[in-house]
Length: 318
Ligand SMILES: Nc1ncnc2c1ncn2[C@@H]1O[C@H](COP(=O)(O)OP(=O)(O)OP(=O)(O)O)[C@@H](O)[C@H]1O
Ligand SMILES: [Mg+2]
Image (tube, helix red, strand yellow):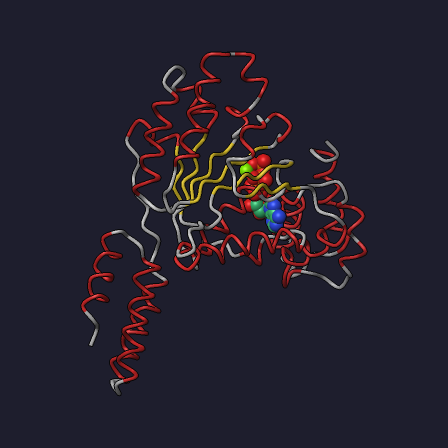
């Protein structure tokens, strides 16, 4: 039988929308039942938990005025899809592990890493990292479009930010403040001293006082523009860069998958040097689409090189 404490925790986690805790308790109950010989009941409980793990993440609505400034999603992106240096991978993995065992950490008066700054050139995986964190932890992803928020609510941005942080406190999720340099920049402060300074100060205070269980992720293309005061507010700062030769190889291999023709990826890598992850991914997709259009089942080396060079001519090397 489940103990009174387990039933209470089960109910509480249900009302808190804390499915992770809910599952843990349910599995504890299954283990108890199994120990006292009720193995079929234990199996049934385990099966129910397993099924529940695949149910869609619950996405909540923002108030109508913020509706078009916050994009909600429930990504299913996995960490293996993110092609980054091993050290990055380990850091993201640590963020996931700390979250999964946050109660254990809290017993010692510490908190899991959950305020994270992602910076680096376009198309290198910042937004994707937020998707990975949400996907791996089965949390909803809310992307706050900072530049739009500022333009739309000029003069009352701080009040809107407060509304967002209230939401963050009440509803667990991954909150990505994209185009973060729209508020964080030194330059912005000079342009509109009053408003930008207020918005930045408000953000710094909200983030500092936030004790929620949500992730607060800020992403920017330009770390040099960011105010130094911001850095110490974050538990982790990850700097993204364009892929090196070995990452290019991995990226192309992953993306082409079964469409890879009879050629070694190493032989095409030099044609992708200087392109971002996003551009290389796009070139691979273009090549696959082209192969499909001409009724071929594989991408040839020449086709891939052509698509990479097209990308390079269009956007690369900038
Ligand atoms: N590190 C990566 N590993 C695998 N795929 C990647 C990576 N980075 C980017 N991609 C591919 O490119 C797409 C766009 O990347 P993403 O949106 O994460 O870039 P970003 O760094 O947020 O760029 P921006 O600064 O323009 O917002 C991804 O959806 C993915 O398909
Ligand atoms: Mg992005």
